[in-house]
Image (tube, rainbow, N blue to C red; front, top):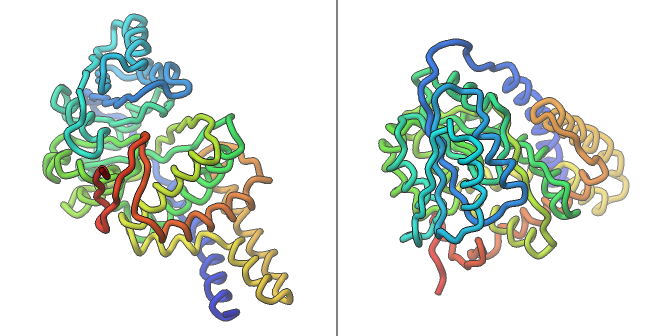
Length: 370
């Protein structure tokens, strides 16, 4: 058992070093300057009042870009997000925008149905799909447009830093997303290229979406963002990790909601990318070092290099890549929590999403349970 733990811990230390190299490789790439700025359609699916919704949406109305439109989609006209959209439309009449009421979605993934409906009404080939809890800088569209000057690029997905000032459990989750999660993205990018996309903000050409079967092909997947990038890469289109970092603002959640959210995420990740999910174990040097010490206390010195490399990797991810600060006291707590949820992700095949229970299939598709 000690030998197994030592091998796994050695793999963790190598992985931590790889994550640092991967971060510097990502930071060395800059979008091309100059060139034509083609018109862009921004697609924003909405569902209820996210914390800070008005300010999140305002950052899209105030983009420093010459030609863009914004489309919003809600399921019902009574959705409270409608009032926020109407207010911003009045404040920024110079920005073309429209609000679409979609009605009840005819298939499991309601977000995909909203995106499909908005895409049908969008005027432009280049579209930016962004969640309602995303806040951006004024150069988002110009940066993405520059990256699409390379005609090999079919999809660009934006890394994100998680921002929360709410509950302890939300801050704990943000610590993992701002360190461990982004490290996994960068290592995968370096070792095998971008063969997936991240949900909060994705830019794509309409022609690329059509070539992979459109949103109709994505409608039954819980992780529609991941498979969108996967299908595009398999079809020969370029998928890149954008140089533009966006902010993912999450509100306060209690322990019950955080557990449901993280189990949904883990169970979905295990089905979307089985080998990659098992490989997540190498992202957890601190829990493995503790297990080794618990098995034999004479191995306590391994805690030092494990903690040092984990802290160094976390610093590079948070401070250099995402430009955010960490509560360092939460880092070891989050590492232990992440290990627990990783183990839990191997069990169960149901998830709860927006108050509804779904059954997850082995291939990542899901269906509403009776």
